[in-house]
Image 1 (cartoon, rainbow, N blue to C red):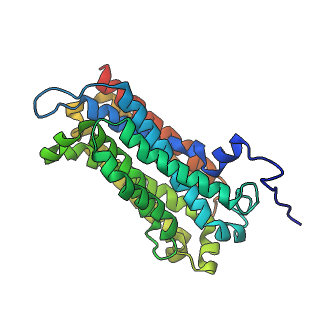
Image 2 (cartoon, one colour):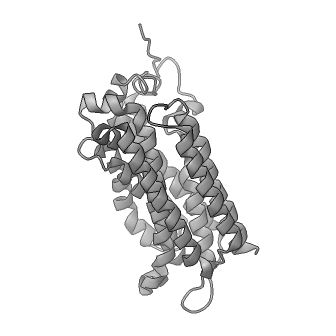
Image 3 (cartoon, rainbow, N blue to C red):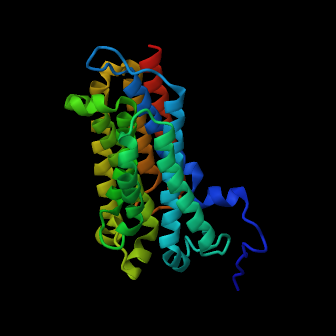
Length: 313
């Protein structure tokens, strides 16, 4: 018989909150927000100058990323509690296992949402991020409901994470970018890279629950097209990502992207290929390795190479 841990008798540990929101997975999106920050600060404005570097902006972007992601992840756990309890793979998560209570998680979610909106107000240099904060937060949280009505939920997640480069660009460059549409090329290409990349690896990850999703009426690519079909779609999504990386190398030239970033793109192509060899339709045993290790390496590698190119080479 499963025994739940009562929050009133055993206070939640800090590690419980980190586990609730899978804080380690921040490594996927945060490096792309950081790369967008570097690109936005090194790409010339229409006047020929570059935006001023301010530590306050960096802190604001960091706080916004952490708070927005934490709010969205906690909301996901709230709305999926009943589903997670039925799925053997997720039954040990914090809410169905009783490690945290719904009231606690609701408070945490609202606190993080307030922290996100407040960070745009207190740290960022213009009001555009504040205006966009509520719609962005609603879209991020909307992903948690998507699998109840569309198999495009994986794409929804990809687009949700891809908002970070766009929001960063808007935060750093403000009204300048609104006056010059051509200035949107670089952040839109980077956002598209993120969307295609996340969509592909989330489809692979969802293959673990293909049977469960089918049985419970949830929408996902593996449930709709089968695991083999899902892998084909994931491969196509990652091919699109690699093509867009080549476009980004061109679009980021005004910021300084060059040879090192080009080499990094080739390494990323190898990592993507490795991800698709670690897991196959009939062998999902190494899906966690493919999901975390490979994708974390991709995001960090692109950040490091892009930063060195733009700031030092």
